[in-house]
Length: 305
Length: 140
Image (cartoon, rainbow over all chains, first blue to last red; front, side, top):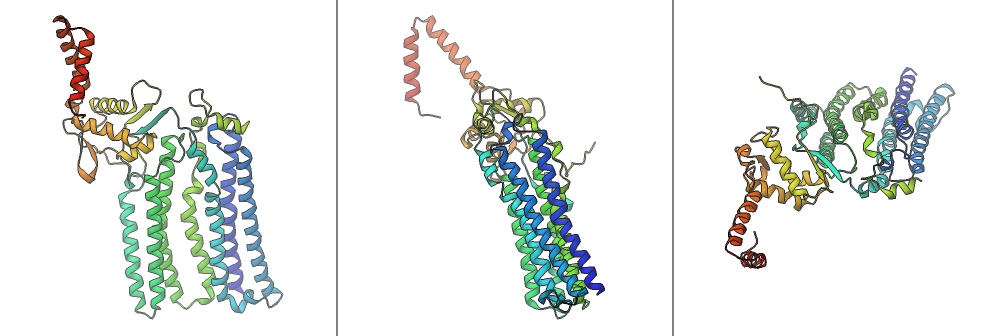
């Protein structure tokens, strides 16, 4: 009973962390921008009608609300089986090892798909329109060759490399103690896949064409730093958390497996979302989106009016 | 005194501003600003420069425009390209950036035109002769 209650508490924190706190921050940030830098004064920041952005914020809130409801229903079912003694299939306390595979990880994937995936993918239309906007007549940049070390210390890059190598060595050593080979290979493959995805994402961020032609250089660098820090954080945290989870699981604590998995995904979420969570949009230079006679974008202005 | 580099925060480099409405073409603006930065010691010898693609993307210019500016800066020995390692500020960039080849060409042409006029050659004859000479020599 104690473990079930513990699981419900940990699972609740997973719901709150990824589907309440983070989306709230994104939504309040969006509302702040819409209220303080509206299309009437900053038309260049809105290549789409203002309703598009309001709908986007509403959709984020609705999608996350639905996920929270699903999560709370799961907790309700689990507590129901515990207190009421109902047999609700996978939710029954006797099958709690199934919660791990059927609830925690898939639920996390769903949360991330909405919190990160939807938030980013749903703005494609905005980004495409922004890229097509007429570039300013006066353009400024720095005569500086961009590189990874502009945004991350070499020490951190070394730590990331050492962590990943150490993880592979650890998993291969761990195999000697009866660890199934496919799990070892699977873990190494996961880390390798993550590294490839993160490297590609950082490479694209550093080398890609400016998506927003009006964006101030300082703001662009802040966003690049955010992406690099997120990637580096994940590079270090993922192998560390996986190794920790493997060690804990080796103590034959299958009854705690769902709790450990939930804590693991929360750790990943914190590392992944923290740079973005603490990002201060208030420090952005929104003056670049103001209407300027010389740089006016009549198309955008017409859409807004 | 040694100053430890600040790795975590990106430091603004030499600012380059391109005004599309300026009568000077973008490549000439770029050249002038790189030379000015070298002369004012904001760009140091051996300092790496952004790649052509990076600069073209950041400034919203055509790759050929930036490539032309780099090529002319390299001709003037203000920058040097080291293969795949990219472009760097030339070791003698400060001295070389003071030499303006186009200004020198203009001055020499003016001297020649003045001499020809003194000999009684008309302006239309000078123009024709100049065009013939230019058409006769291969493009550079």
